[in-house]
Length: 201
Length: 201
DNA sequence: TTCTTGACTAAAAGACGTATTTAGTCATAA
DNA sequence: TTATGACTAAATACGTCTTTTAGTCAAGAA
Image (tube, rainbow over all chains, first blue to last red; front, side, top):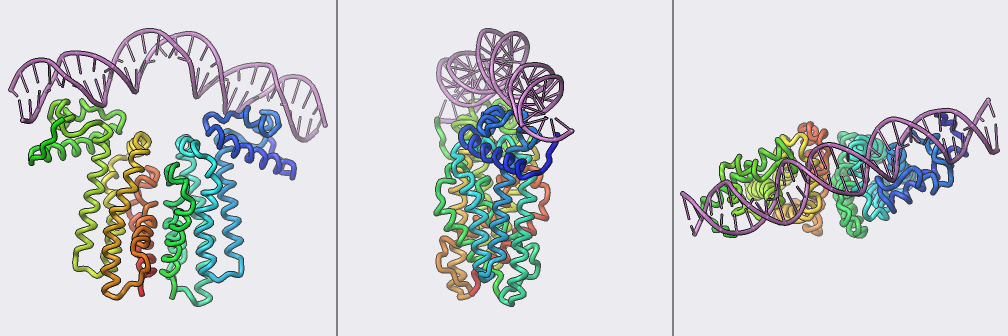
């Protein structure tokens, strides 16, 4: 299996993941076939396997992509000129709502998808959370340097920020609860408010 | 179906739930039959239906019982003479670890159980969380009266305390992660520390 | 040569009729 | 009045056959 990474290659890969998102939303994991997918992308079936080694890997990569985008946004916020408090609040809201928005159109199929790949997804979630908490940690340390925050263990504190908002992520919520974006936003904001105050000097 | 509530009745009901816990741990939801259950309790099969109207209801009642016990403990802590801070910390730890301990012996069957009853369980979880947050709310108000805490909306703040620790509850964690009691305790404590500081005056 | 493809295959999923098990009922007995 | 287990309808398991599909690879296109 070749995988020369060219602009071309990258674009097709992205196109496959775009189609994956579309078909996943419409059909769910089981009913999305590789033939469907190839047709939707507009390439031959075999070509799919030039980019991914299995159906599972395609869907996991699709999830990875969402989290990569979350990370990108988080880093952008982390590097901005806002004050630490604003950064932390915006980051917490983003990690919850970006995911929410990314899967909102999956009305039905999210549970089924997670049922099929639960184990694999859970393994990766640990890594996602760890990477995200790393970004939070850096913002925390910056906040400490500025002298407005007091945190004894930035690592653990960053993890706490992640865990405290994890129960609002799509994977933890039943499909029906996913309807209420406003409520979720309100809840993250409340938690963010308390957490941030909780680390102030 | 009669359900005269006598000491006798209550005892048998409890015995049924005790057996449920045992059989659920050994066989899981699907493979636990009502015949098994009746035999384990030492009563006739029909008698089970004098106390519960369906298999689903038995298992849901079993879960209810765990949460009732959590609530009882929470109320006990809430009424104790500890200072508010201690109460809140102990309550957060208890709501996570009591549940953990209640299902720890389900090595394998917890996921399967939740898969079968996910929808029904989720409906109830909302109620559980609401009831628990009510207990937290009262402690918060007491803390405000004592003058050491500053909270604008005790309702929402209590909810935030609940949500912030929800991702550490058994239903949200994969079976394997459930192994590490110490780690979970450490994480709740860290979150508790920040949350409590976050509402201090 | 390098890359793409769709026909091909093995394996998985589905369809379907049959046999077995089981949740829930109820006439009978204690 | 309360408890029971034989009973029934419905669900589940099973065996067999058929269809679908994930993944491969020889052949063709660029």
